[in-house]
Amino acid sequence: MARKRQKESNHLPKYVMLRKGRYYLEPKGVLREVLGGKASFPLGRSYGEMLQEYSRLTKFFSEDTGNYTLSKLVHEYLSNVSAVEKAPSTYDTDVKTSRVILRIFAEFRPDEIRQKHIYQYQNKRKEQVSNRSVNKEISFLSGVLKYATQIGVIDQSPCVGIKYLKTKPRDRYVTDEELRAFYEYAKCKNPLVAEYVNFKYVSGRRDCELLTMRFDHVMSEGIISLVAKRLSQGERKPVLQEWTEDLQEAYEKLVAAAWVPSTATLKKKGYVPPKKSEYLISTRKGAPYTDSGWRSICNRLMKSAYENGVLEERFTFHDIRAKTSSDIEDLEEASNVLAHSSIRTTKINYRRKIERIKALDRKGDSY
Image (tube, rainbow, N blue to C red; front, side, top):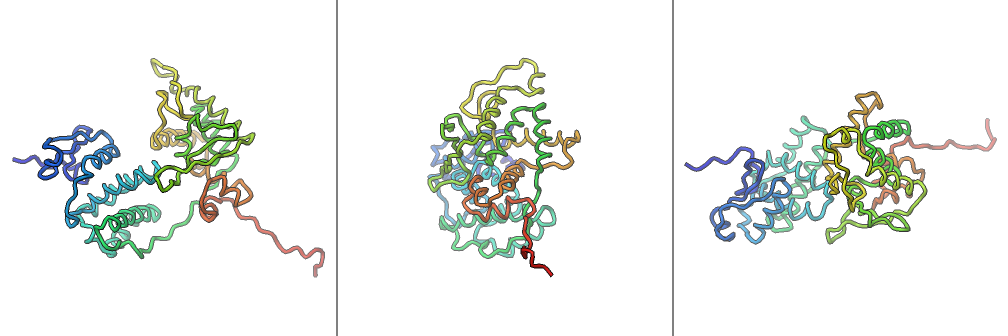
């Protein structure tokens, strides 16, 4: 009797299986012949590795576009578009979002999806998650179906003209007192996170930019950041942030903190000092942190600060970047520091202080 397809493999690309924490491609029919008759190919442990290796093995194998399911299309989109053209953190988000979308649309053919299906999905999901989350899911689906039009699978995307749910921009402003309190708490628990917070505030850089910053990016005129917005070739755009006294001091503290172990690390048996790394922020083995790994470290520390009464309200590390923008008086200068391509983005999403306005000055001519 044929072995039943495992439940956890339901939303994987065709012929991909997950066993004991590893992904395998087990091709059948024409695909197996194209791949030389081999019965099984290891694809790695992580979901991202699997997608990359799957795409590499199957890129020369095409099927009739009428046999495309959204599942196949999504995995192609993640491999050929998201992984190549988007920032690593955005790619990770797309991978998570794809799993949500595929629970509903996995067996649909792209030409079967109608606007009514998208609105039905929207109406159901908004009862479960925030409007912002629903909009991100619809936006991801829109990207996938736009890709489908580009490769000739469908003529027009049903997402064109879809009305997104109304959302309110996040308005959490981190006060100087809150940032200082968290910084002092983090200095005792994890000095690297403390100086990361300080450097992030002064520089206004995104997490993905800081985590990929290398020592060869440090120049006499300033420090190079590879901003998340990518160029047409798929490379991230470099910008040079010129030195100021605050930026120089924050940089030196960050570099020094990289060699100061946290109290938790010192308590571990067999502690080994960290290895030299080409990255400003790295693991003890010298490798760069992944976005998700670093976020977990920071979130645990934030939770600890809140539970121990250091903070009355938690904030995200993205709120620190918004604080940088808000604390710069000139809007155009704030947009330049954050390396935004549009001042409108800065104004709507990153200016969180109460806007100050003036009253009429009648210059002594009163009633």
